[in-house]
Image (cartoon, rainbow, N blue to C red):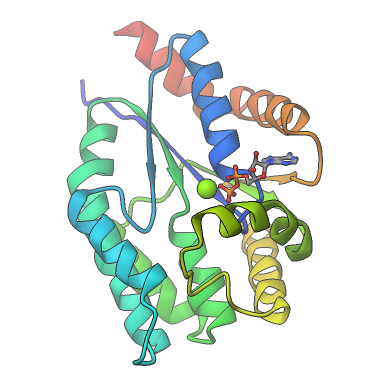
Length: 224
Ligand SMILES: Nc1ncnc2c1ncn2[C@@H]1O[C@H](COP(=O)(O)OP(=O)(O)O)[C@@H](O)[C@H]1O
Ligand SMILES: [Mg+2]
């Protein structure tokens, strides 16, 4: 029988708690006997991580055009999907991915103005049409995220091409994420991230493990 894994993506602004919630969910699923592969975008493979550094941290002097940025992100995604995500899913694993196609829609499609349709076409091409089974959106007002990541910025000090964008840019990202979630309520779990991290975690764990498709995945896994 062909194995099929379960693909979970995490979306939301910097500081919304994606990395924190991924770790907490992976720990909780391990206790249920489910091992997870944790990965991230842009990046996730050696080559794609090299593209990530260019995409996020290129300090100038050239302007990186939105089209260039999108194509580089999709190039990194194509490599990541082919090299890491699809093989892990074929082995029946749960994959937890920090950012994925919806970030391209929100950042490049909406906030950078390239349009959702163009991004959707490239997303489909780069992923070979593999959609996430569920997408967890950690919703947070941009200022709250900034307050959480300020310390990280000060200690690491690395120039980030997205973090330097203004409040209006980040407001557009947030609205785009919420609109994507509203358009696909079956795929998205939206959580208010402006709460204590344990309470966000408990809500996500409860909602995920109540999903029919997740229960089916678990039943098939145990049946093998
Ligand atoms: N619910 C929360 N409330 C307060 N602080 C949080 C919460 N979740 C995460 N943090 C803290 O905020 C910072 C950013 O969290 P992180 O998980 O790295 O977010 P992201 O990966 O989305 O950028 C970290 O210092 C983390 O400890
Ligand atoms: Mg993170």
